[in-house]
Length: 219
Image 1 (spheres, helix red, strand yellow):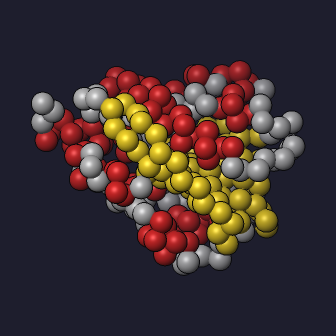
Image 2: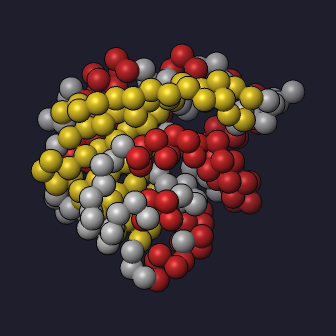
Image 3: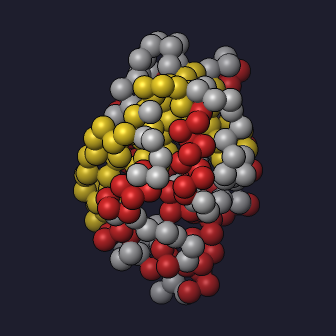
C-alpha cells in the first residue's frame, strides 16, 4: 500500500521530475501519456514549414513522430525540469544536431520567444501545475502567429480526482473550467474532442480508466 508521503513524492516528480527517480517517472509518463500526446499532435493541423512549440515535453520520446508529420518542421520545447531538458536533448540528439529541434528551460510563466513566433503550440498534462493560468495562456497567445493554433490536452476532473496523488499540488479541470479560462483571452475555440482509454496507474497498482480532452484554440 503506497503511503501518503510516497504519493506526495510521486506528485512532485510528475510536476517536475528530478534525480534518478525522475528518469523513471519520465519513462512512465511517456508510456502512459502517449495516446494523449498523439491526440494533441494529430489535431494541430500541421503544414509544411510550421514552427512548433511544446510546453512541458518530458523526455520528448515522441519528437520523431512530430517531425515526420510534414516537411521542414521546426520544434522548440520548454520545460521547468532541468532533468527533462537534459533527457530530451539526449534522446533527440540527432534532431538537435540538425537544428530541427531545440530544448530550453523556462520559469513556468514567461515564454522566452518574441511575439507571433510559432504556428502551432501544444501541451499535454501540464495545465494542472500552472501557477498562474491566465498569465501563461496570455503568454501563449502572444507567441502564436495570427491564425495559429494552441492545443491543450488534459485528463478530465471526474477521472483524475479518483487518483489519490492528485490531491497533492494538482488543479483539476473539466470542460467548463477550461472554457472559463479561455474566455479570459482572445483565443477562439475551434473544437474539442474527448477520448477514454485504460492506462497503467501512475502508482503502479493496476489499470485505471481515463477520460481526456483536447481543446483546439485559434488566435
